Image (cartoon, rainbow, N blue to C red; front, side, top):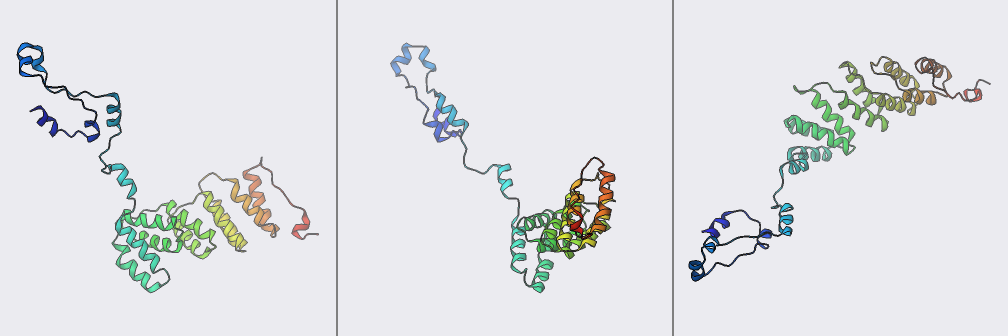
Length: 256
């Protein structure tokens, strides 16, 4: 009965190796010794067996670890592959968006957007963002705009970046100063100091405390434009009176 009861227990095979069986006494010894009547089958565990049981695992995936590996569902993966497949065919791409992207749940849509950004598929990510913006559950979030605008500015796609910028401002959102810096740098790299100054004027309306970096990027990029640079310099000296600005020789401005 004892063996049958223990067999029902879920004892791992590793533990069974360390079990030692005490011999069952004979009938004569049982009759002569009253103390041995209680002796039947006693498992004894060594220290090593207890240590092995502590590390024992039955091989099944644990809940939290398993969910952590499945951040993207099958539907989202299928949509990502489809978008990348049809990215060069605008007609097929729009049809795929209508038939598959619009069917995704909220979390799958967000997962598709994040994964496309991670894979640096910025144009596809922007297309998915416009779809997300039309959903009933959409709420304005500056961080959804931030990564897309910075990625577009670094790739010199300033027209697409400004479409997102205008949409963000219509939703009464202000980006952080990293976004301001990258957009200003993008316009200066593109040879558009006037557009960079427009972003600078928009930055001065931001409710967040000002930072030095966008000012210094403008001061460096506006060296060929001394009038615009002096405007930025005056604002910088008012906001950061204890900071030093390097002024290059006047020959660089062509004033001599």
